[in-house]
Picture 1 (cartoon, one colour):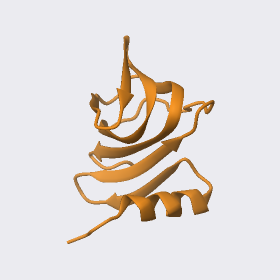
Picture 2: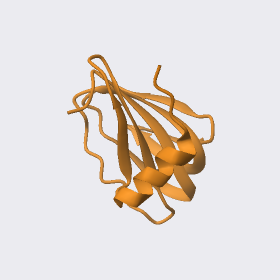
Picture 3: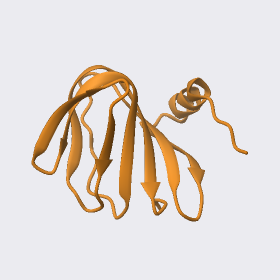
Length: 105
């Protein structure tokens, strides 16, 4: 079993100075923690993998393809591989658990 604590992952991510920390990579999937602050720009480009986002905390708008929705704690979003997507209008510190399948490179 691999057990992770979000508070520790977030501290490790902050110490690394990046917005994203990959903490798990397996043959069929990978997972990471993504963090954005109000005023930040989300620099993502489409990925080669399907993604699932679970918003752990915060609030923002998320555009996936041509659809936009407000997301907050507890929101779960599927983003198909190759689809343009971006968080924006971030109003509260955003922490998102990200799962890629197959795993990201």
